[in-house]
Length: 70
Image (tube, rainbow, N blue to C red; front, top):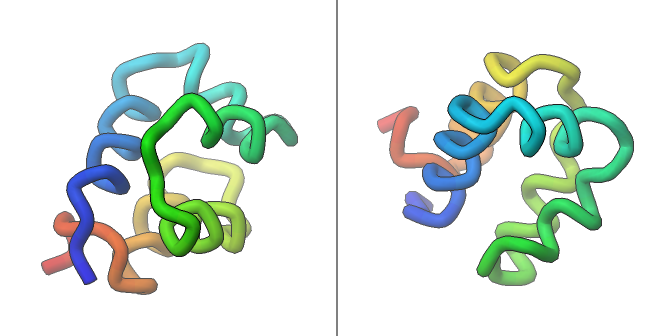
């Protein structure tokens, strides 16, 4: 499943260092509340175990929630 909101989340993490830091420093749940994600999208993002943007985006692509993976 491709979702534009997940792609936007990854883009924001790529371009906004403060957002990226919150996403990877135990503030992910709070950070996600600032976005318009569905419950399924939020759960997919929360389930990702990653400490870099590259591994985070890769995990989302593998889960089917990002358009970047095909």
